[in-house]
Image 1 (cartoon, rainbow, N blue to C red):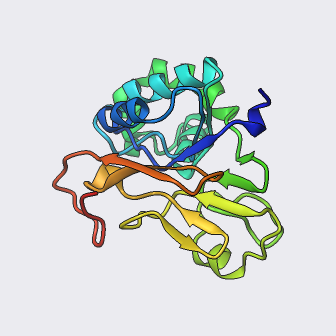
Image 2 (tube, helix red, strand yellow; image 1 turned 30 degrees about the horizontal axis):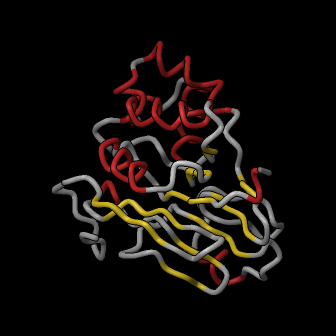
Length: 206
């Protein structure tokens, strides 16, 4: 079966939440293709295990891991050797392992394109180029040129639609839920996120 014709599930920002991700994967159909919408890394308590799990899925052909702003920040810090002390991913991996990950992170795509839809971490700029940190300017100005766009990056209480934009980061690392969205069927699957005292305003349990 052609990959583009398979059913897809776009997964919101995981941020090192390994156990919720395992629960979500056990819930989703095993033959569907998974698209991780970036920010697999940082913030959570099990970042290396989460990275290894997602990378194994990529290597097996079951998933695509998109680059988020947190992956890009780590790439930049490893390249420049500046600001590494601020990265939870670097702290949990250690220098040697982090540098082994660098070429993998550098090859992560910015966009995944399906039939009539696409996924990217945050959105597109005015020129139609992926922007890993954009928010309101994209939400307000998107003209539909790429069809439905599924994005993470900005935690919301629930999966939310803004016209042709679907926001699927539901704050798993902040005590919200980890969400997967199917562009072909409009279905949403959610599991409880990480138990945490770091509550983000407006993001609560599933």
